[in-house]
Image 1 (spheres, each protein chain N blue to C red):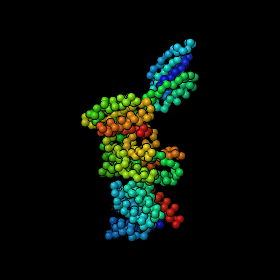
Image 2: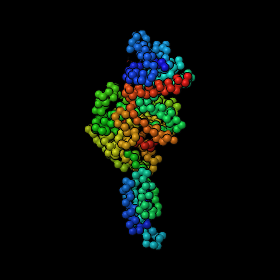
Image 3: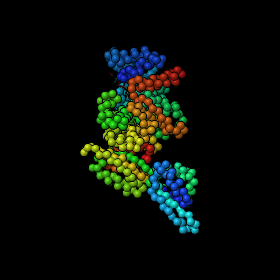
Image 4: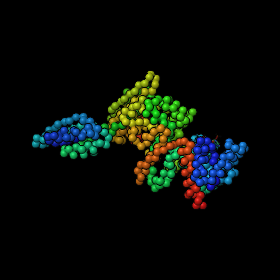
Length: 163
Length: 308
Ligand SMILES: NC(=O)c1ccc[n+]([C@@H]2O[C@H](COP(=O)([O-])OP(=O)(O)OC[C@H]3O[C@@H](n4cnc5c(N)ncnc54)[C@H](OP(=O)(O)O)[C@@H]3O)[C@@H](O)[C@H]2O)c1
C-alpha cells in the first residue's frame, strides 16, 4: 500500500512508528515534489506491507500521531496464508509447485520452509502465500490443492476458510 | 418404564449401575440382560427379546457397522414399528438410515434418540435441537475423534513420531488394535454424516465426505506449525451453503477453542443469533457414553412417557 502525507517536521517518524506495532513492514519511503504546488511542502509516499486486516488499525494509529494522510493507495498482496505440504516434495519438482502459484499474477510464494528427513522419507514444507485479496487467495489455494492432488502430496490448510 | 437393553459391552455395562440411580425400573433391564443368551438363557436371542418381550424403550448398544448399520438397523426398525421408543449409541443405523427411521418413529408416535453417537458425553444433539432452537445453524466444526486428537496432542507436546504416539494410544486403550477406522478419519466422517442428515435434513453418505486422515502426518509438519504458534488437529467441518463436508488435518492457532488436549472432543456451532457456541468434553468411555444414553432415556421419560 502507499501512504501519502505532507512532509512537515517530525511527521515521517510519527507515521513510521506505528507500522511495526501492527506487524507491518516498510518497503520504501519516497519523497516527491508536487509540481502542482508552488509551496515548499513535499509529499511523502510510504510503501508498506501489512498483515491481513491491519490497515484500519494502522490508519487510526497514524492519525492519532497527528499525521495527515492524503491518500491510501491500492492494496496489493495483503493477504497472507501458510499451508503445510507433506510428501515427496523434491521428487515431484518443488520449484514447479512454487511456479504454479508465482505465475498467477495475483499470488506468490513469499516463504518456503522445507524440512528434509532421511532419504526416501516424505518431507514437509511450510509455504507462505501472499495474494492481493481473499478471493485471489482462494484461487491460489485451489491451484495448490490441485497440484497436491496431482503430485500425491498431503496439504494441511489453516482452519479459517478460503474455500 | 420398561427398558430392553441390547448389547452388554463396555457401554451397556457402564450404564447399568447408573440407570437405577435415575429412578428407572432396573429390574426389566436385568431381566432382559439375562435373557439375551449371551449373559444367561441360551436360545433366547436379541431378536427374540426385541420382538417378543414387553418393553417401552429399547437401548441399542451393539457394535457399529458403518456400511450396513446392521444388526442394529433391523433391531431399531423392528422396535419402532412395534411402537417402542429407541435410544442408541450406535452410529451405523443413524448414519445409514436416519430419515427412514425418523419417519417410522413419527408415524408410530415414538422417539428415536441418538445423543451418544456424536461426541459421546457432550450434549451436542440437545444443544442443537433445544438449546439453540430458532437459530439458523450456519456451520459446525469440531474435533470428533479422541484417538486422533490424542495422537496429535502427543506429537505436538512430546515430539513423538506418529508411530510412537499411535503405539502409546494403543497401550492406553485409546486406539483399537486396528486403528484404521480412527486414524483415516472414517469414524469422524460418520459423525459428520449424522450431523449433516439430522441437523440440516440432508441425505449424505460416507462417500460424500472429503476425508483426509492423520496417518501420513509427519512430526516435522507439527514442528513447522509450532513455529508460528499453531498446531495441527483433525477437524471435521460442515458448511452446507458452501457444499463443504470435510475431515482434514488443519493448522490451528494454539489458542483456538477447538484446540483441546488428549482424548477430548470439541464442537463449535456457528449460528445466526447466538454466534459461535463451543462445547468440549469426553467423546468416549463407558460411563461417559452411558451419560448421553441416560439423558436420552430420561428425556423420553419426562417428555413423552409421563404425558401419555
Ligand atoms: N465405547 C465408547 O466409548 C463408545 C462411545 C460412543 C459410541 N459407542 C458405540 O456404542 C456401541 C457399543 O459400544 P461398546 O464399546 O459397548 O461395544 P462393545 O464393548 O463391543 O459391546 C458390544 C456388545 O454388543 C453385543 N453384540 C454384538 N453383536 C451383537 C448382535 N448381533 N446382537 C446383539 N448383541 C450383539 C456384544 O456381545 P458380546 O458381549 O457377546 O460380545 C457386546 O455385549 C457401538 O456401536 C459403539 O460404536 C461407543
